[in-house]
Image 1 (cartoon, protein in one colour):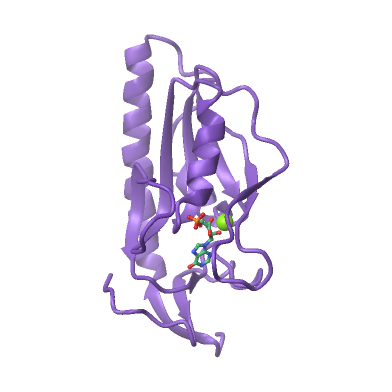
Image 2 (cartoon, helix red, strand yellow):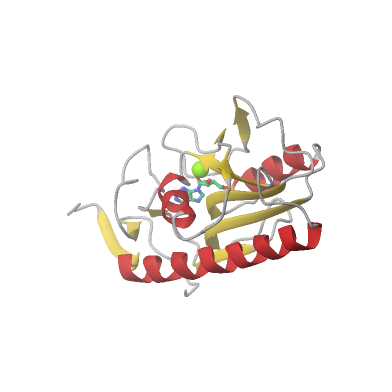
Length: 192
Ligand code: IMP
Ligand code: MG
C-alpha cells in the first residue's frame, strides 16, 4: 500500500483480538471498583484519551467496554514536526476539570520515554480522582525518562519507530489498520 513501509509488525487480527481482551479486562476492573465504592456507576468512569495518537485505539477499545462511561480528551504534543526524538511533552489546551473522586483511565497509543503519560497522570492526580490508571496499545523497549509503567499494555515492541492504527510520522500513516515499521527506521536488536 505504501512503498515507504518496511514491514508489518502487528497485523489487524492480532490488534483486534488484543483490544477485545483489554477492553474486557479493564471493564471487569472498573466494575469491581464501582462495586467496592457502593455507588452507582453513573458519572463515575472517565476515559482520558491523549490526542491525536490514541484516537483509533480508544475508538475500538470503548466498544469492547460495556460500561456507562464518559470521554474527556486531552491534547499533548511531543514530536513536533518530523522529529523522532521526544522533546518533552507539552499540554495543548485544557485538562478535564471534574475528575475529583472519579475512576479515570488515561489512554495513549504508545509508552516511549514516559513523559506524556507522566505529565498527564500528574495533572490528573492533582484533582484527587478515586483511581487513575494508564492504558497503552504499545510499550516500547527503551529506558524511560520518567518512571511510568502502564497498568494495561497491548504489546511490547522493540526500539523501532512505528506507524499505523493512530500512530503517525509527520502526521501521516495514522489510517493504516496495522502497526508497521517505516523504511530506514528498522529494529535495533530487541525482539517483540
Ligand atoms: P513519550 O512521551 O516519549 O512516552 O511518547 C509518547 C508519545 O510519543 C506518543 O503519544 C506518540 O505520539 C509518540 N511516539 C512515541 N513513539 C512513537 C513511534 O514509534 N511512532 C509514532 N509516535 C510515537
Ligand atoms: Mg501522541
